[in-house]
Structure formats: C-alpha cells, structure tokens
Amino acid sequence: MGFGGNTSCVEVRTESNQILIFDGGTGIRLLGKQLEKEFGNQPIRGHILFSHFHLDHIQGIPFFRPLYNPNNHFTFYFAGRRDANLVMDALAGIIADPYFPVDMSKLPCSREYIDLTEGTFDVADTKVLVLPLQHPQGCVGYRIVQNGKTITYCTDVELGTEWSDRNVQTLARDTDMFIVDSQYTPEELPEHEGWGHSSWKQAIEIGIQAGAKKIALYHHDPYHEDSTVEEILQRAMKLHPNVVAAREGLEVTI
Image (cartoon, rainbow, N blue to C red):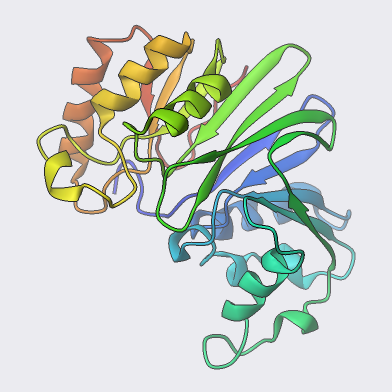
C-alpha cells in the first residue's frame, strides 16, 4: 500500500511539456485522470512507448480515459520485432471481445502506430536510443536524451547475459536517472532463473559500472510487502549514494 500496487507506467515530461509514457500497465489509469485534470478541455497529445507486450505492461490501456476523447492524439511505439502491425495487433487483442466491451477500432481519439528498430530516433523533442534486453519473448530498453539530460528505462531484464548487459550499460552510461528491474533479492534469484528479472544487487552493480548518477529500483515483486522493499532500499543505499525505490506518484526533476 505504500510503494504502490499498480503495474508498470512511467511518465516523462520534457521541458517543452511533451508527454512521453513508458508502458501501459495499470498505473496509466491514474495518469489518465491526472492528465484530464491538468488539460481540462484542451487536447492531449502523447507518445506511448512499450518495452514489451506482457500483460502487466499493457493491461491499463483499456482504462486510460484520454483515449476516449476525440480531441486527443496518441502515438504508440514498440521496437524489437519485424512486424509492421505488431503494436496495433497486440493492443487490439485485449481491447476486444471477450476481454473488453469496446473494440479498439471504436476508440474516439486519433492514433498512430510506429514500429521502431534498434537505434536512435527522434520522439517529440527528445532523442531516444532503443536496444534489446534479455527477457522471455523479448523486451527493449530506452535511453531518453534532451538538452544533455538523460533518463534510462530498463524494466524487465534478466541481468547476467553478456550481450544484454552490454546494451544495459550502453543505455545507462552516465545517465542522470537509471530506472531498472530489481524484482528479486539475491536469495530469491536462483529460484527464478529464466523468468526475465534481476535482483536489486545486480541492478546496483550494473548501475555503478555504467556510472549512473541516480538509480530507481523498479518492478517490485508483487509478493514483497512494503517492509521488504524498504529493507531492500536500505541495503542498496549502502552500495550507491543515490538510490530510490520507485513508488506510486514519485516525481523526480532532472
């Protein structure tokens, strides 16, 4: 109840007030309410970038209320698979019978779907580097750069694979904010080999190697109580001087 029970969703607001949203887990429902309150009758334009399409990263999309306003416009992005219709098909698969009463084609807002390949792209007023990560069925990490400031988003990665670790270090090199998978404790990790997630200690270690200035422990295990997350945070702070545990509503200015 303290750190929050919603699944993955992070908003990045640029200096020119562009809206970038990373993943559409259940947290996007509350973000939608906040955006409607902020913009009132003004149109909302946003960019939604997915790390992958596992259910906990898309299940909030049907409940993101700004999609139901014809004045709004959203661009959906994903990288990692060579399928021009992947983004649209994945979302349409859950906003449809028998899972949801409204078909995605009936959503009133205007939409675009963009499949990214590995590399660097212009998104809104930022430069975004996209690289694949080790995770079942695939996942990507993002490095977002604007005016010399950098945010790295590496949720859902199983650290310990050479090629993937190299990509994580590239994405996180000297970053101002490193948002990273830290689901397990080191003691829990051996029982979850192949599940696609990492321990908080691995997350701190690779953040130190990359020179990350601030590390946000992310993707908490749903079986961990607040007391467990707090204990993990205290242990992590002994290894890196600037660590936070991601929590509902946390705001960081870079």
